[in-house]
Image (cartoon, rainbow, N blue to C red; front, top):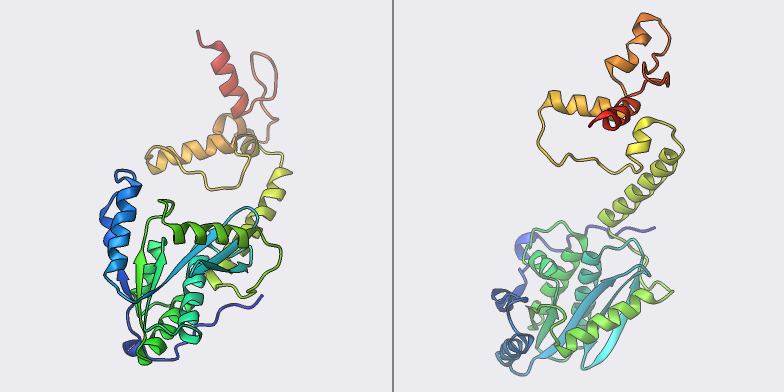
Length: 282
């Protein structure tokens, strides 16, 4: 599968930083009524007269990944490869909005509205090594060289802003579609998919193991202790998990047979000792 190339068509000092309006971040979404958020957003729009507004959004569901842009109430959708991250989907939507400004828009001022603060923050870094962010900034430079101005506005999602809600619905619709409109992926997304495939193969192999650790740790995900332990304590815990203790495995060094439980003559294991201890406790 092809990967987005890292293209620097212009030196970094010539690439402009995106103009991002994040006024709405000062309002806590859970504490601010949605009516008030919509009112403040409308106030921001009124600061830019004669501007064309484009809403963008990305969506990643169990069905797939998609993104969309809303222009004058009309949705434009793209279905992306399933391995695409939501961050990439948001970036791709903004790139398509910028391409629209470059090719079709007649307006000299465009507002691109997104609910992805991480993407807009990344757009503020002209030295980014992200290929999609670079593509956005380079397209932005072309627009600025042609006397076209673009302002990015962040809005909180799901607060009833019509354009944002339409973009969200359209992105979900694109994610549910069967065909793929863009087959190129970003290297980090591809690496994540490869790592996921390796983990799944490891899990399938681990499911067939017959060890004590397998009985108490059925999956291969990292096992992080809930409490801080010293090195000595961590070693003891790991030996118990593996079932390797001096009481149960010292026979390997002495050349004797495997020890049995003195109470029931069952094979002596760390798990058996812990179970018998819990039974005998008053």
